[in-house]
Each structure stands twice: as structure tokens, then as C-alpha cells.
Image 1 (cartoon, rainbow, N blue to C red):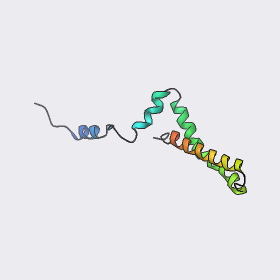
Image 2 (cartoon, helix red, strand yellow):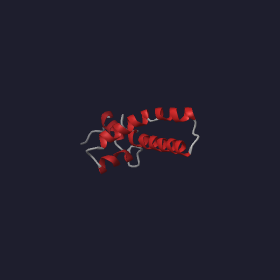
Image 3 (cartoon, helix red, strand yellow):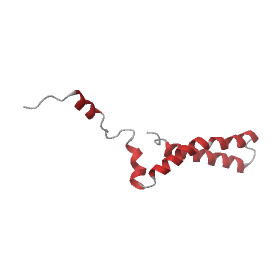
Image 4 (cartoon, rainbow, N blue to C red):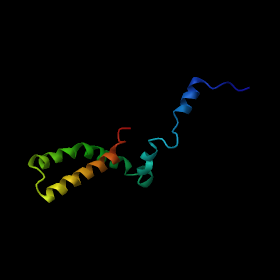
Length: 91
């Protein structure tokens, strides 16, 4: 005769990853480049923190030329990419 599942058994089954979970896409970098996934996530995380400091000189002097505007938009796009890549570094 089998015994009913214990509280521990119920908790472990509910903690399993569910298909479509929000962390399911986090493994794509590990599948593509497993050896560099960790360092790329670390670099993305810290780049996302440091890049906004580069906005300050551009915004302080104003975006008066097309080159400054393009530099700002490039930094912004790079920051968004760094946020996406490094968002799961601390998970």
C-alpha cells in the first residue's frame, strides 16, 4: 500500500520549472555558448550599471549636433542590450 505524499513531496513538485515560465528564456545563452554565458552575463550586468554615467557629459553639454545625438542613442541602445543580457546575473 502506498502512503500519501508528504508536505515535502508537495512542495518539491510545486517548485519545479513550469513550461512557459519567465525564466525559460534565460537558458538560451547557455545553449548557444555555454562556456562564455556566465562572463557575458556578468559583463552585461555591470555594463548596464556603468553606461548611464556616460550619458551625463552628453546631456550636460546638450545634444546640439547629429553626432552627439547618435552617440546618445547608441549608448541608450547599448544600455538596453546590456540590461537584457545581464538581467539574470544575480538569479
